Image 1 (spheres, rainbow, N blue to C red):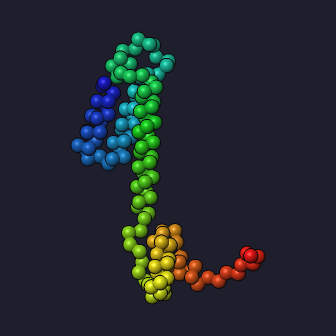
Image 2 (image 1 turned 45 degrees about the vertical axis):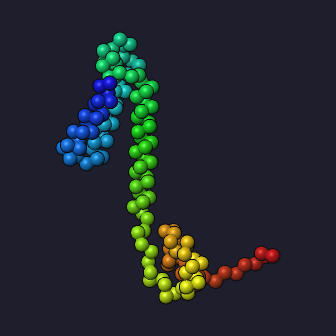
Length: 132
C-alpha cells in the first residue's frame, strides 16, 4: 500500500513545487525502481521492506510497463497533433477552379500533400506506356 501512496505523494509534491511534469515522471520512475529493487530476488524472502511496500515483483513490473506504454503513446500522439497544420493555405485558390477544389479537397487538406503539392501534381506531365 505504501508503494501506491508513494507515487501519489511524489506526484502531488512535484505539482505543489511546480516542477515540470517530466521531472515528476522521473521522480516517480525512481520510486518505481526502488520498489522493484525492494522485491529483488537476491534479497531474503522475509525481508521487511517487501512487506512494507506490498505486492510482488511481477505486479510492480507489469505496472511499470503499463505506465511506460501509456506515456510513450501519449507523447507520440502529442507530437503528431503538434505537427498537424491548423489551417489550410488559401493562397492556392486562384490556381484551381471551383470544380478542382471540390475534387482535390482531400489532398489539399492532407499534411503530406497540401496545396503546394497538389499544385505540383496538377502541373506535372506524365507519360504512361503499356497501360492497356
